Every structure is written in C-alpha cells, then in structure tokens.
Image (cartoon, rainbow, N blue to C red; front, side, top):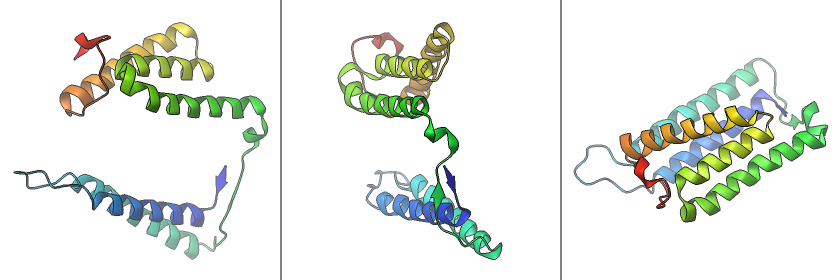
Length: 157
C-alpha cells in the first residue's frame, strides 16, 4: 500500500496522541521516581514530533494529497491468504497463550508463520525455538515481564 507523506504524518501524529492518552491512566509505581507511564509518554512525544515533522515536510514540499493506494501484490489471492494466515495466527496466540503458555504457543505460531511465508521446515523450527527462548529469557528474566505460563517447558524459567 502506498500512503502519501501527509497521510502518514497525520496517522503518526494521531498515534502519538493515542499513546499519550492511554499512558495517562498508568498507575505510579510506589517508591520509584519514574512511573509506569514514563516510557510510553516519551515514545508518544517522539512519535508526535515525528508526525508533525512529516506533516510540515509534506506541506513544504507541495505534497498535500491525502490518501493511499494498494500495491500490486494485493491483487494476488495467495499473498492475501498469507496475510490472513498471519493475522489469524496473532489472534490465535492471543486466545491460546493464556491457556497453553508462552513457550509452546510462540513456537507453534512462529513455525506456522515461517512456513506460510515460504521458509523451509528445519530452519523454521530452529529459528522459532531459539527466538522463543531468547524472547522468554529477555522479557521473563531480564525485564521481569510476566509472560503466559504453563507446566509444559516450565524448566526454561
């Protein structure tokens, strides 16, 4: 999809505003100088500035058109089926991971996504397992982000 610079700038600015508004509801963390909303607000600020820059740049260069058009690949049924499959995998992850857990759900989702996009089976499995373990260790151990758990492969954390 081709999006004009002005349209992308407006969408980026709106995204920054939405991030900031949602971060306003984050509760302060007791005993800490910075609360849970600090980083999202910083990201929102930078996103908003980026959107404003894009809008000004588009107007100054004379590209005042708002709109978009679909790329050539969107006319292919197979390409649209791959996009739909990946979107369904994301929905499936959201629904299944609280029940089955992060590790097995992520491995399955990544393997199926890679196979859908044309990766061979062995590299898809290897990359999925390694990526899942790296993500789980990074977020679960290092950043202390609670990920969906299950008894399956619980030794990893």
